[in-house]
Length: 254
Image 1 (cartoon, helix red, strand yellow):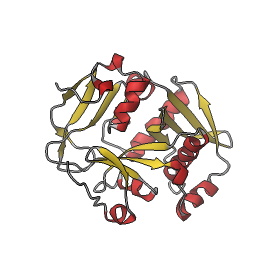
Image 2 (tube, rainbow, N blue to C red):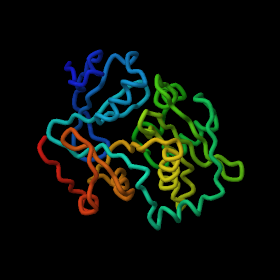
Image 3 (cartoon, one colour):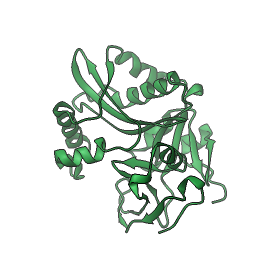
Image 4 (spheres, rainbow, N blue to C red):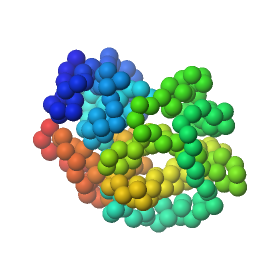
């Protein structure tokens, strides 16, 4: 176990997991650095962890800590400067009739059924398509920070659910799942634009998107939201269009 240097982290210990198969880059192994103990990670500490490149999965706050790979890049949208591009504006128009509502952070059978359909269609064989209600609750509904749960309905029909953590300086996307039968609906794009606009309305400067992984088809889409800032070599900076287009950001000194 090790400690990180930020004063907020002095109450924490950090351990590195054993290698496991990478979910995003075939043939790669991965490791994570996990912050413990979880009961000491309050909203203030958690916000500092997110700014240090961590993210949350249930009660666990972690960041990639791989031996010879730095493909996972923490990214965030500076929402005051964000302007949706043509395809993103088209996704907004397509879903103009969707109504979003915040609901209490608790289990709902309707949400769980949508989650299972999404996992079966998008991540079949990954294990999450066979989740139990208990695993679902631990993954999405267990939180010690300010987590907000939104449901999205069109003509009364549930089409998407999102969970975000509200920090002092932004919203941090935890997980979004949507109706997989709407194959041409661009709901994922709509969700990011909607959350960016929500961050701006709340007076929060950033929308944290987790990790951009240029070599992964599942995670490369985040480069389409511009401007985009990345945490590289220990500090946040805005990426150039050339870096986003090529997927080769200048990393500087590590």
